[in-house]
Image 1 (cartoon, rainbow, N blue to C red):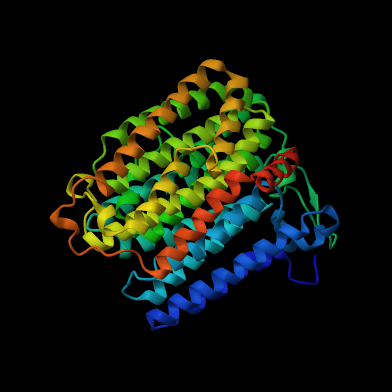
Image 2: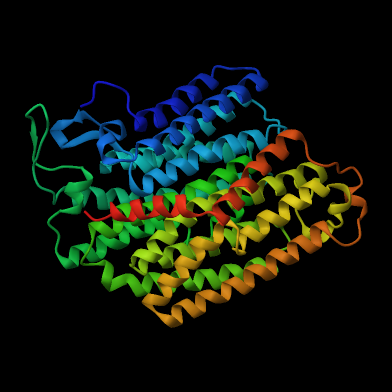
Length: 493
């Protein structure tokens, strides 16, 4: 047990305390300032941790408080591997979201930003937890604020969309809880620092070494996988996503698609695969086939969409499906590609949502068929969109190219035909992305865009940060590759 506050604690408690404080604030501008300032503090902490990766700084990246010793659980959090990359993504994303959506107004803004910061705290906890009970606690803490954010501040059909989101995620969480309890009952005794001993343990290492037969691992694999698959989501557990993305406030959709879907990928990498080594080889091809079906299916549906939000939602399903397939390819190059792509996909998809939020706020329109010629009215916005869209389809010299190339290389190494089938999505992504750019921003201007103006300073700042990262990690990806290699290195139980 440490005698000082460590990096993982700061990453969790700063947004938690700021979020609680926001609930007491009546002024919208004050709530926005608190949210932005606290998220910037979290970003500073996250960037600082990159200077303390070396093993000699382990005490700064680790905390383990005695919590419920009689049932074998402790408040154990640690910053390493995939968690480091995803906490960095979370820390980078929230300030960008708050800056770029600053013009948006909310009734009861204190509660809105309080819930957003609680969601940030929950996300950080998921990526830092090294105890199954703590992991489950933060898993729920991240989801509950999003449920209220969507159901209170969402669109006209928000209740239906939010209810579907709640049913899917709640069912998945219950399956995971059943799995956690079963694995816990098959763990060994644990002795704590104060000498207390529990018959079983919720610690990550205990779960890795639980005494489970191949048959038990088989059905437990699906309990955990379904929970994670719903969160990603991948085919056929994806049907909640398009309506939830469409009806949620855009800043909440940014959190959902940019960061929260990574909870499922993280769960597979950090918990599922190391826990069930006997079951994973049996189901690898099944999961990869489901993921590849989802990639092609979602890409084809995206090509048919007129609603811009649903187009980006299906695009996200395709990208996440590729990451899931790459994880189960089970080789280092594919896993490193996933680590890189989880960060870069989050940045790129948030950039797309910022552009769509600006378009919808200025025109009140979501459908491509009702728009056209926005480049005449908003040239700066058009330039930003084209760059972000090219990054989204992994054009060389953009940040997504390296990660996507490594994922395809890993899938190819596992199975040539799977790689070839998944590769069709590259063409489909280019089709629906370029079609969207052409229909919305080019061509003849129509009456719906008469009152459109170019973007504000805050919006330019948020999009400029994203574009800088797109080119920086596209031209010089080595820092992200190094983080990815470190993440893969610490995966082995």
